[in-house]
Structures are given as C-alpha cells and as structure tokens.
Length: 536
Image (cartoon, rainbow, N blue to C red; front, side, top):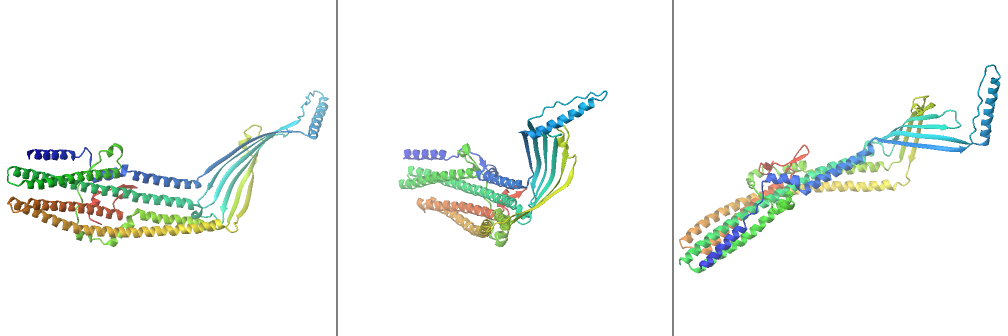
C-alpha cells in the first residue's frame, strides 16, 4: 500500500513539473493590439494594397502632366550640277574677269581676276530642330507650344540662312472628350478606387485587431480554465493523501482508496487536456499578433482580466436604431462600397460621352523669323530677326463611327457594373444591420446566462461545504463528495466560458459598429477602455 502511495505521489509531482508553463513573455491586451498593428501580415498587406492603389491613381494623373519633346535632324546632300548650271557659272565668271581686265587698263588699276573652279557637284547641309511642350488639361483641351528651326547652307547659295517658326497650338474637343468629368474620368475613377481601398483597408485592419482581441479572450479563458482544473487536481491529490492515510490507519476500507485514485487520474487527464488547449490558444494569439520564427516556440501568455459584465438596464440605454446609425457612420467597408458606386458612375458618364462623334477644333497661331548670319549664331537669332506674322491656322476634324458598337457595348457593361456596385452596397448595409442586431441579442442573452451561472456556482459552493461536513461526520459517501465537487468545478468553468463569450460578443459589437478602432490623422488607435466603458 505504501509503495502504491509513493508511485502515485511521484506521478503527481512529475505531472505538476510537466505542466509548468515554459518561458514566454506576458502580454496585455493593449500590447497585443499594438504588435498586431505593427507585425500582423494581414495588416501589412492592407497597407501595401493601399499603396498600390495610390500608385495607380498617380499613374492616371500623369495623363495631365506637361510633356517635353524635341527632335534633332541633320542632312548632308551632294548632288551633281547640270551642264547648263556649270556653263552659266563659267559665263558669269568670264564676264566678271572681262570687266576686271577692262578696269586694269585704267591708270593705277591692279585688280586680280578670278580663277574659281566651277564645281561639278553641289553640297547642301540642312539641320532641323524642333522643341516644344504638350499638355492635356482636364477639360480635354490640348495645348502645344513649339519652336522649329531649319538651317540651310549650300555651295550654290550666296549666304546660309536659318528660318524659324514659333507656334501655339490648341486642340479643342467639341463633342466627345470635352469636360473634366469626361476627360478626367479615368483619374476620377482611380482616385475613387484609391479612397475606397483606403477605407476598406481600415475595416480589414480593424478585423485583424478584432481577431487578436478575440484570441486574447480565448487565451485568457483557457488560462483561467487551466488554473481551475489544476486547482481541482490539487484538491484531488489532497483527498487521495487523506484517504490513503485513513486506509493505512484502518479507518476506511481500501475500496475508498480506489475512488480517490480514480478521481486523481480523471483530474490528471483534465490537466493534460487543459495544458494542450492553453498552448494552442497561445499559439493562435501569437499568430494573430504577427509572431513568426523563434517567437512561435515561446508564444505569449495573456495578462489581464475580462471586461466586467454590465447590467441589463445598461444595454438598453441605447436603442438598436442608434447602434445601426453608428455603424452606418463608422463602418469603413460600407463607405468603401459607396465609393465604388462613385467610381462606376464616373466611368458610366465617360461611356455615355464616348457615344458622341469625335469633333475637334484645331487652332494655331505664331510667327516666322529669318537670320542670314555667316556664323552658327544665326540658328538662335532666327527666332528674333526679320520676324513676320501673325500666322494662323484653323481646322476641324471629324471621326464618326457608323454603328458605334464599341460605345454601345461599353455603356451596357458600365450600367451593369453600376447596378452591381449598388447591390453590393445595399447587401453590405443589410449585413451590417443584421450583425448589429445579432451582437446586441448575444450580449443580452449572455448577461442573463452570467447571472444564472453565478447563482448556480454559489449554490454548488454551499453544497460542497455541506457535503464535506456530512462526509467528515460519516453521514455521506466519498462518491457523493466527489460528485458535488465535480459539479462545482463545472459550474465555475461555465462562468469562465460565459464571461469569455460575453467579452467576445462585446468586442464583436464594437467591431460591427465600427467603433473598435479610432482614426486620428490617418492613423488607427485602440483604447482598451472601449471594451469596458459604456456602450454609446
């Protein structure tokens, strides 16, 4: 008998040693939320998604940037000179030499005759430069200022020349493509998508925080349940030791030892199960917080208490309609669905405009310049020397599709997209309303369950005390005492479970009403008092 007792005590000590928690960091609820906002992959993905939408918006805005353009061209052309041109050049040279010879007959005259070779080829050099800028305004008008210069030099020309043309050009859409809502529709749609994604990301980040808080409550409940089961194990061990001593002393039959031993083994199994559940809940909490790598080997321990259960009258101070109104104001996913409607309406307006013919008016004004300087400075001087103008140009271009199936199909498709966006928004609002009402009903039911479970636990507590007195007086059996203690433990475990569900339901109410996180200067903040303060 003593050997059996020693074996049981040794197993108990080994079990207690095995269930001692491993080294890990304790985290409070606020710390868990902060780490979630910093390290949770889902939160980080949402931030990158918003950045991606912002990039798309900036890209679409680039259609209205100033664009600089330039072209540089050079041409060297050598062409044979015709015999008639060569003869004309020789005749001109001979005529000039004859005049010089005549002048040399005068007293004191000494002019030199020309002996210029008549070229058989003519070399021409032409350089073209064009510099300008282009900008499309959000009204659809395209503005293009430009300067073009052509420099010409050849063997047969007397002097080189550079000609310039300075122009201001406007292309004005008269039907298709006119107006900010039309020309800037893609930019407006991209901006709307960016704002919608930003709002939706707030909701998704709030959901990540919501999951962390839920897992924190689950982990805290698992810890309290584990502590309670271990407390039950300690009492079972004390009971086993007392019964063993009494059996050894001959005060009780050996059969009582079997009952105490069965109770000890049962609580050992409960402790083992509680240990596993507690570790799993810690792992889930760590993942929700964004733990990875070595952090997963030592998941966090929850530190804190559950929010106090409110009274029934505190819940009904605010009407369900007010909670729904609060949700419509705060829920960023709902506002994102409204922004999606704006996006589709902007694209539909453009699609309707695309059905019109493309009728553009082109107007151009400018002046021309000429420079015949012998050096390369003529290239620049041509824009200010020998200026003539004002030159002008006007024209109209028309592009008229006959059946225009492309525009009609686009309108049909865009109308469907708009209706889908409106249906999604209405469905989202219906879901939000249902979620708020369900959350309120859950809290109401859990408040009632908590009050009943507390009363049950108090009655079982009194019953345990009474049954213990009867057992000590020899008026009750060990089985009866074990049974009533088990019922008391289950009642306390039920309270823990109800408090956990209440904390989850309260967190859920904050989440579905969009009040779990607070946005300040584009940053999300969490206040733990949100889960303990009044529901308003």
